[in-house]
Structures are given as structure tokens and as C-alpha cells.
Amino acid sequence: MALADDFDGFLIDLDGVVWVGRELVPGGAEALRALLDAGKEIVFVTNNPALPAASYAERLREAGIAVADDRIVTAAAVTARLAAERAGPGRGAFVIGAAAFKEAVEAAGLELLDGEAGREAAVVLVSGHRGFDYEELLTATRALQSGAALFATSRDPTLPMPGGAWPGTGAVLAAVETASGATAEIGGKPERHLFELARQRISGAERVAMVGDRVSSDVEGGRWAGLETVLVLSGATSREEAEGAVPPPDHILDDLAGLLR
Image 1 (cartoon, rainbow, N blue to C red):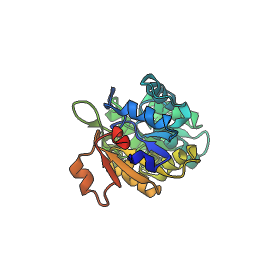
Image 2 (tube, one colour):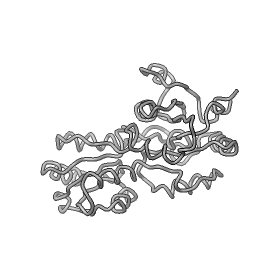
Image 3 (cartoon, rainbow, N blue to C red):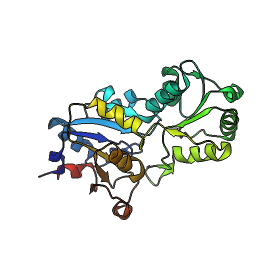
Image 4 (tube, rainbow, N blue to C red):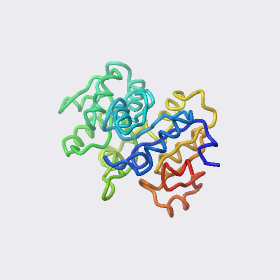
């Protein structure tokens, strides 16, 4: 019997699980189609703030995986909503991140502050992006020194990419926390906020597993959410690292296709 038969729902990470960079993990799209055809409930959960949920859903549909936009939960949207709840509507926010993350923050009801105006922000939100520079670090530091609250999409140090990992949100956040002395509240995995929202979207599924490629976010978060955990080796974690984790994932597979073997 295949492992997938033990569950009626899955939370599935994207980077390192479904794709690495722009390249689909071999066999992953076929496995996802088979799971959906079998009636499995799936919500995709990602700490990557680079794109809005609708764009990730479209990318999946282009790969032949029929999913609705609301079956994608991003750490960007969850973190933006968390910061807005903590700060209150209309408060100023300084955002380190890609355009999609800034759009999510604005959609959550916060006012975006750019440049030196960001030093007056009530909240600072951090995610990884390739344009991170010293001026952003300085503005965030000054705002935090003046009492702003700090939020981040994750502490993931790297992002799986073809040819080797790239620096992730955790690398950028480390600079902000080091310079300011502040500690961020995390909206994405492994914290409960993202898991609670994702679990609500498949509330009809009783036996749910978290499938991811990173012990520190996917496996730990899934365990804290009360889910069985499946770690795939197509992304950030080696078999030795997975087997050496304390406690280890409930299941270790080479890739998504292993759910059906």
C-alpha cells in the first residue's frame, strides 16, 4: 500500500518539493495530479514571498496541476496579516522584500513607508529579496530602535536553487536583528499562523500530513501542528541530516512521487 493511502489531505511545500528554481522536480507534477485525481485534499504552503498566491497557482496550473488560488497559502500574506493585527489598521510599515510582499502588506491595511519615512514606521516586515542593501538595513534599524515591531516571513537561511542554495529570508533577517537588537515574530513556517490558516482550508480532511524539504520549518512546524511529517530529499535536506534530526521526520522519501510507491 502506498503511503498516500494513509491520508486524505496534505499540506505541501513548493520550493524544493514541487520545483527547484524554475525546474519541476521529476515526477512531482504527475504525483500531484494522481493525488488530486484520487480525491486527496491539498493546500500548498510556502515561505517564499516572491509571488502572490495567484501567481503560484497559475504556475501549478501551467504544469497541469488543477488548483484554485485559495489552495495556496503564502508566508507573505500570513505575515502581513499578523503585522496588521498587532499594529492596528492604517499604521505605517517599512517592508524589506519583493513587490509581491509589499502588495500583501498594503492589502492587509498597513501604509507603506519608503525611504527615510520608513524610520517612522510602527512595524518593520522582512523577507528575502535580491535587492536588499545597506540603506534598507539602516532604515529598518532606525525604525526598530525607535520602537517599531519586527516581523518576518521565516528564518529559512537558504532557498533551494539549481546549482546550489541561494541566501534566503533568514540571512537578511539575521542582519536586521543583529543591527537592531530586535527579535522578529515569524508569520511563516514553522510557526502556527500559517499552519492554522492552511488547515482551515482543508477542514474536511481528518488525516493530514505535512510534506516538505526542510526539517527546521516543514517538519518542526508540521509536528507542532499535530500532523504527520513527510520529508522529501529533493530540496534543502540530505538523508543524513533527515535521519539525524531529533526527532526525525515520520517519513523520509526521495521525492513527491514516493508518496505513491
